[in-house]
Image (tube, rainbow, N blue to C red; front, side, top):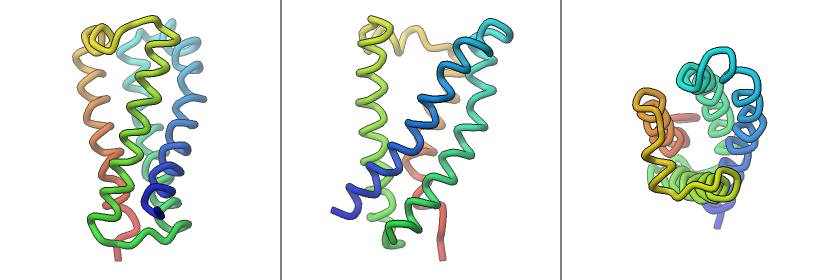
Length: 129
């Protein structure tokens, strides 16, 4: 149960930051720099948020340092993130999941998929003894 709570908290922290940064990216950065550049500019910020959120959650909830506990936390958070993202895409943009994936920019889309993997494994990488 602790792993589920940790994964949910980690998800909320990172998703909340992305939810705040999303409108800033769409309304300010995209018109000035284009979609690809705006998404790539947001990624270092989200990387820092991911590291801090994983570190804080692991420390705050005393997640055991075993690989299974940490990866379980990350996978739960990733699952919640994907469900939330696809639900928002379907609702806000009116796209199907396949349309959404097909319309991703090849460069920033690939970087996004790498960031998803980093998000999942970050709890394992932080706060190691």
